[in-house]
Length: 174
Length: 174
DNA sequence: CCTTACTTTCAGTTTGTACTGAAAGGACGG
DNA sequence: CCGTCCTTTCAGTACAAACTGAAAGTAAGG
Image (cartoon, rainbow over all chains, first blue to last red):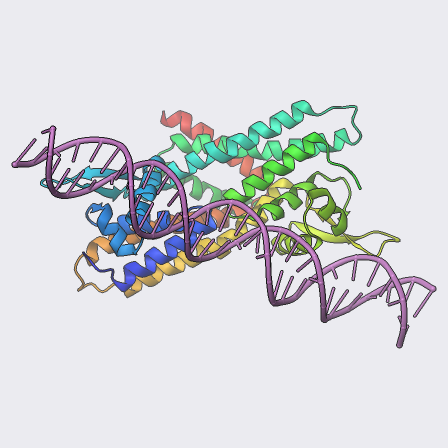
């Protein structure tokens, strides 16, 4: 089994911490980091040993990474075990994660806000104020959704172009 | 003390859940939701009763919201207690949060990546591959930083304009 | 089929974060 | 300055999420 270099250790540990701050399981993030740096697909057993976690923990974590769509199992000739490899395209990886977090978190929030606005009884005291607040929040989430929908279809290069355009507008405004 | 309407309850509970998913303490998020919906600033005591949490918990949570800069203490004539109110501008609120999360999480990651690239020993086996991966990741984080820096200075309206421009480019591309 | 190699599931345990209540620390009014 | 009202701090506790290891499940090879 391959020992980790100091550099790999540094990257993996940092990535793990990062994960926890964004509501992603530390081990899940660490496994992803390991696979991302690895030039070849790794079997679960080796991942477990390298990161010093239980084999079963790896199983669950890999499963989660697979549902995100950023890790997949590949087969190696003459080996019955599954080997796992990470997607290497960073932009696509984050796009996948963002898309899914939007679906799981942003969309339900939009629904909640719509439901609240629908349920709002105009006769209730302070209804106008509440509506104002809910609408402001809803407007923000709609804008985020719009932004997301537009990024979704764009190739990486176009996003970069937009970045440059933003820079120009900023200069004009100031 | 004002009882919560069903609608407020719904909003506050949802916001609390939302918070936990993004690494923000549930109570902190709930307090923010309550203050956001409240037309008037509330004393800590009332927040504690309304949400059924300990007075001391409110104290800590408010403190955190204050460091984010999205809640502040105000004084009410003839009342010795501090009253707390939430910022009402949603865009500004998220801008503040994003800016600070960037500083706490994105920036250290950029540094880590730069350090890794600097430490990388070209003589080590697989160094080229590792460099490639680290550079790809670093490039992404640089782009995110660039994007953030540009958004930072822009007024809300300009962000909306960029959204529309993106829509146009998308149509052209397809 | 049976064996062996590998993977997943799950009940119990550990760990870390959040929360509480009591005590200490201000500050204002009298 | 003393009492009271309010806020913060902190040590201990509760709770939820993560993790483990054993056992059950699955599939390939002989």
